[in-house]
Image (cartoon, rainbow, N blue to C red; front, side):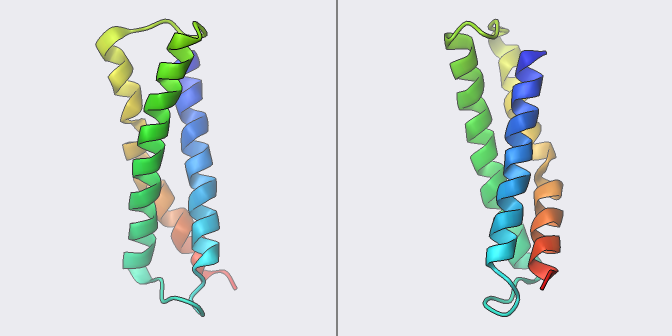
Length: 97
């Protein structure tokens, strides 16, 4: 359960980062369009995937979480499921003026 909460927190941080990146790339500066928001979502998703793997490894090494062996890998892929959320958040915050 601790690993699931940990990965959920990483995904939430990714959504915040996507919103900040979307806000930074407002339409006045750069034409976001679908490709800009998709690019942001791609970068954030890759970053959160790596961060969730490192977070789980750190959690296990600090003995806060118990190692599940190969099942730990399933938690690393949850950020991929959040990629559409990152895309929508980046698009929404880019559209705000």
